[in-house]
Image (tube, rainbow, N blue to C red; front, side, top):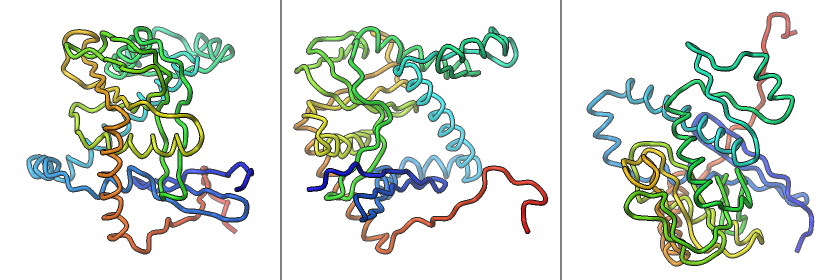
Length: 279
């Protein structure tokens, strides 16, 4: 058994994510959990594309993806001790000088959309009510043995209790322990989302971080009117995640069959291009 710390990096190529893991001199390439799960047929997306057309659907999906990334990053900044500002372009509350002063004191992220700040406000209230201990945020987890890799949103240590954060169906934490949490910012909730958390939980345990008691989804696009308005926090126990993991493995097997010679196209291009650079 090696004691060397693996070198881990993520490669993004448009919508595909790939992880390069180097242990001693051996290099492993693993497609991300989300890339593999994308092979699952979702009929409702096909119907939606048929209703509005592919071009409009592509634009809306890209907008939703960028929105989700900004909210994810704002959440990461907040739970790691930074500051998130709402500073709309039309009526800025803070000047550039104000922001620079705050940045000199710590990490700052600026949101310009009222909607995006509202999503973070919901998450802030969740954090204040549940008071989880943040064990990890945006952690790359992997299992070479099981060909799994992905970036996990959060691992929380949460005390046993009942928390009024999820509408009429309060969040019930049955056992004090580690819970893997994934942030979802879309309007719809899909039971298939658990198929993403389950392999993360398996990797987290395999990497030696401790036993996982369950999983949470922080759904900021919910229609709840009690607890925290517009937030739903469904929970799965460890036993339920075991079942979800079995489903994930079946989907991953289908992806492997359809991509037998999978390998990322690896090359580098510069982040700045100007005339005169090429010889």
